[in-house]
Amino acid sequence: MKPIGYWLNRADQALTRHMNGMLEEFGLTRLSWQVLNVVQDAPNATGAHDAAQRARGVTDGEVLSMLAANAGTPALTAAIEAVLTGGWAARPAPGRLAITPEGAERLARVAERVGAFRDLSMTGISPDEYRTAVSVLERMTANLEPARAPHPPA
Image (cartoon, rainbow, N blue to C red):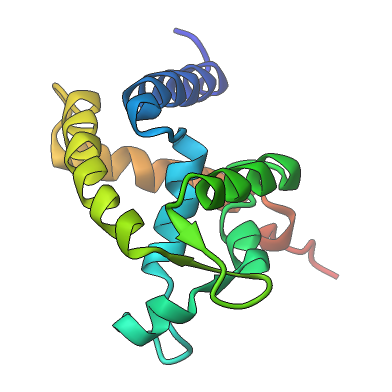
């Protein structure tokens, strides 16, 4: 049996390759799709997801922070520029991103394709198996991240 690191890398590469291929017709990549989701789903300070908050958008720094585990700053900055250039998002104020009305309409169409992609990736995997896999990976990450590592006894 190959170690978990091998399968984590293979799974991430397969997800990225297939998703990039599926999103290509929309002018998106997996990373730009992730940027759009952060922009679209950003709550306000109270956690509400209202239309006014979506119109104000999120800061570039918030996007970079939320997706830091997915890619480095140069790749994320390029993805932000791509969604701006593609008309998916706009800048309602300097340093802020918001989904455009056209971007919102296009995202609804893309969401259908992403749903089919997720169904394909989950073929033969039960919801319980998926939850178990995610839970195990969360715990492994918590065990290894320096900020969460237990402190040695004094």
